[in-house]
Structures are given as structure tokens and as C-alpha cells.
Image (cartoon, rainbow, N blue to C red; front, top):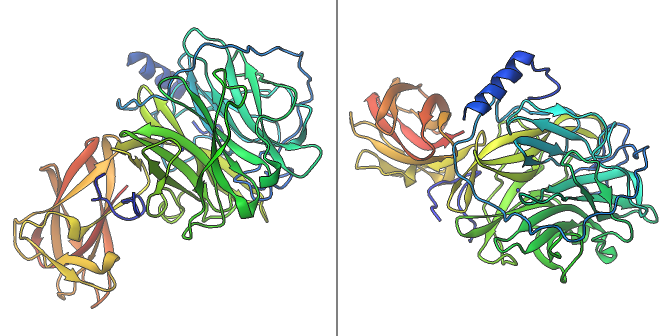
Length: 507
């Protein structure tokens, strides 16, 4: 794995249309035409203990006929890995919610050209469902409820973290995994339901929960993973705070029953807040990449991390620091977590939630975000989240020298930039082609103004000013540059004056 990227999305430490802003009919037509051409609950909901997000909501008032689920569906579609360029809807931004009200713990699937999103219970649905013509929107909440009713073992108001698995082409049975509270004790368990439509209503299987480890405080956050040979697995998080961990268990071919004992594959690290939860597993770069969240879902330090393994059962080696965090986003997205990978023909996306409003205590309103997801081997890079590149790891080409600087990131910087026309080349990786912000952390202690020229892949040169700074202090300047998907060469050349560069951050 390439270790050139450092910081929030860096190397390993040792090895998942905003409806609140109405979209005009014209915009919707433009989007469709473009496509054709190519845990505390929300207000009024019960609190959730140590949940990544309580899916609280009203119980479904309409009992459903006992629809008998298919017991022998066709083999499932294996977890894919597409890399094509994604389509972006007009007005979309990776740092703005595509659904800005009550859509926590989101997951998205594509069925027959339409994208379906499912979330934790809201004030008006046990399982809210939204649809869109593209992953980036515009998203529209569907009327009604995606879950026909709760199973007999479940109490209303605590239905969280849905996971929907579509059938393979030609199949009919969509499988839903969900968390719900037992009606005989204060504990969450995982149930399973089926439907012939991705919009539902999903009808739960009666009997005991699919997963309910009473000795570990119950289970939440189900996530499906399917191997290329069709073998199905379920990941989940055990819910007792002192024993919170991510487990993996093999399922039967139809995904409706357990087919083996569970295995603990990930626990909390010393540098991670409170607990780990919300797993999502994909295979990229020849490795298993496990996304997970750390912390309390209702606090701003809730974050998304990842770990990598060569075997599905591990051992999983965690990356250094969070992939997504409030600080990494500069506060523009708060508490980004419960991430889920959408593998689409247009490329991978990361679907996650962020806090829209703090409502007191553990009550928060969380909306859904969607961001393009790129891969440098097994290292994920998310559009809109920063990746830091330390200047001392760049190709210096004799144009600058590594300098010991205790107040700099990593304790080093490079400089002085005092040779005209001599480039320092920084290799940077971006998930999709487009315009990116390039933040340069620097110091200029010369007493005079200075300027650097910034180019990407030898094109579109432009200056950036380095204002004077006090001895020992650092500041930053930001420029916008167009980049190609994958690796790019960002070159820094002196125009006039002198200065030192600590790091470059791309978002």
C-alpha cells in the first residue's frame, strides 16, 4: 500500500436532492435527461443507550397479511467493485446533506435504475424509504412505511440501522436486516424480513430474532457481505458498552438463517472514543476493507474509520486516525458516521449520516450524505474529506531541504523556496475528476512577501501568496485546482521571495 498520504486519511498504523430543500420539476427533468444520456432517538423517540443511532419511531399501525417469504431464492449477487466515473446531480455537494431530516444509519441500493435509501426510524415511519434517479439525488421521501410490521418479539420505537440486499437479476426476494428492541427486556436484537419490492413493505420472519447474543448485551447494526462464490455473511455490533465489538457470522444461501458460529473481528482501540460499531465490509485492492464508526452517535467526535485484512475473518489492521471526522471536515459535517458503501456502475460512493441539529442530551437530528469514494489499492479516499501530504515526503528535486520544525506537522517542513523555476512535486490522490481545494500550510519568516506557483500535472499554473508570518508561526493559503481521477502531480515553484512548506491538504 502506498504510504505517501498522511494525516486524517493517511497510511496504516501497522497494516462502510435534499428533500428538505424542494427541487424544482425542471431540475428533476435535467437529472433524468442526463441519466438517460449516458443513539438517542430523534425528537419524541426513545433513547438508545450506546447506539450509533437509535431508530426510534412509531409502530406500524397496519398489520400485514402473513406473506410467506421465499425460502430458496436464487444465489445472491457478489459484492462488486466498479470504477467508472460517477454522475453528479446539479446542485449536489459532498459536504451538504442529500436528505436533511431524520435519515440516520442510511444504506442505499440500486434496483431497476432507481436508487432506494433506507434509514433508522423517524417520527413518521418505522423504516423510512427514499428514492432518487442517481446516488447524488435529488432524493424524495416515499409516503408510508418500508416495514409492514414488527415481529412478535420486538417493541415499537427502537427500529434501527436497516440493511437491504437485492436479489440477483431474475430473482424476486429482497432481504432486510434490522435492529429492534426486545419487548421482554432492555436489549436490541437483529431481525430479518423479506419483500418482493425494494420499496417494501418488508414482512418480518416470525419466531426468534436472527441474532440476539444476550450475554453480550444484544446486537445492532447489521451489515451484509457476499463473497464472489455466493457465500453470505452478516456483520453486527454487540451492544453492551464494556463488550462492544464487531462480529462476523456466516448465513445460509437465502440469507435468512445462521450457518455457523459468530467470530469477533474488531474491538475498540485505545485512540478511539467510547466504542466501535456500524460495520460495513467490501473487498477492494485484493483486501477486505472494514468501515466502522467510533464514539457516541450524538456527539461531534463520532467518526468513521477503517481496517484492512487479507482474510475475511481477519486479523484486521486499523488505519491511523479517522477517515471522516468533524475536525477533518472543518465543522462543515458534524459527527460523520454509520458509513455504508454503495457499489454502482458509475463508481463507488460512501453513504453516511451527519448531525443536523443537537436537540438536548442524546437527541439529535441526523441527515444523509453521499460522497464519491475512490481507492488507492485498499486505501479509501472520500470526496470532500481532506487528505494530508507531508511536504518532507514529496520529491524535493534539490529545490528545498527537509527542516526540523517542532511546531510543524510531523515535526518537519521543507524550505527555503528560494530557487526560481525549481519544482517540489507532491503526489496526491483524488477519487474522481473535478475541482479540488488545495490547502498549503506554510511559514514565511523572511520579512518580505513571497509567492509560489502551483500547477497540477504540468498544466494551469497559478500563483499563491505567502504572507509574512512571525518567527515560529504557521498559516495556510488555499487555491482551487482541477485534477484527474487517481494520482496527480502537484508542483510548487518559487515565483519570488522565500518560505517553508509544512504540508499540502487536498479536499
